[in-house]
Every structure is written in structure tokens, then in C-alpha cells.
Amino acid sequence: MRAKLPIEGFGSRVLEIHSPGLLQGAILTVDGQRAPKGKGRNTYTLQRDDGKSTTIKLKPSLVYDLPGVEIDGTRIEVVPRLRWFEYILASLPLVLIFGGIPGIVLAVILIVACIRLFRSSLEPATRYIAAGVLSLGVPVLYYIAIFVIVVIASQH
Image (cartoon, rainbow, N blue to C red; front, side, top):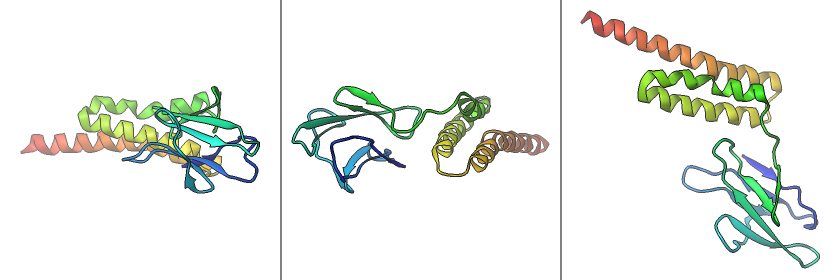
């Protein structure tokens, strides 16, 4: 996922943050090219059109797919936060923690997938239906599969 940064003073240049991948952290780009690194980790220093320097720091997030952004010491909200009921719907897969290590891994994957769904550009109804299927349907299928495996194993 990527999002444009709403920063004044850069004219027609497009500043975007890209969500972290499996093997790399979040990055900042200017017109599609990596921004020049600044002093410190996850820090970038850019020149505005008026010649002044702007420091942009990306703050990693455990919950969201995009990092937080701090511009010259002021934190800005790049994408809106989830609403309370979206947090609840995304956390329903936590019932899988009673399914052992595979259940815990699946729960984490489902929670991250739901959060990414809520941040996607899908229509709201589609987002909530898909998140509901992931949050409710997958755990139900998981426990049905475990039940079937236990029943079959106990018969042999």
C-alpha cells in the first residue's frame, strides 16, 4: 500500500510513503524515486521549493500497514485510523489462540488481513463482508477441521 503525503512547499512533486514489505521497511519516494536519507533511522531530508530543508521521519507501526509520519517534529495522519467497530471485527480471530500454535499464527494473519482490508479502496459493503468472512468464517472452519481430525484420529 502507498499513500501520498499532504505536505506543502514541494510544488508538483509527488511524495509517497510505501508500506513495508517482508524484507524491507517503509520507504519514502519523491516522484517515484527513493528520497535521500537523512540523519538517523527512517529519516529523510528534503529541500522544499523555497530552499528550506524538511525532515520527514517514518515511525513504524505494529497495528497499521503504513507507518506514522513526523514532519519537522509534527506528527501527521496520512490515512484515517480505524473506527472502534473495525477494531472489534478485526480482533475476532483471537478466538483461534485456543487452537495452539497454528491457531495463533492464523489469528495474526487474519487480523493483519482484516486491517489491510479496512484500508483498501474497496466499497464499504465489500470490505465489511470480506472482513466478516475472514474474522468469523475462517475460525469456524478451523475448529471444524480440528474436530474432524480429532474424530478420525480417535477411531484408529
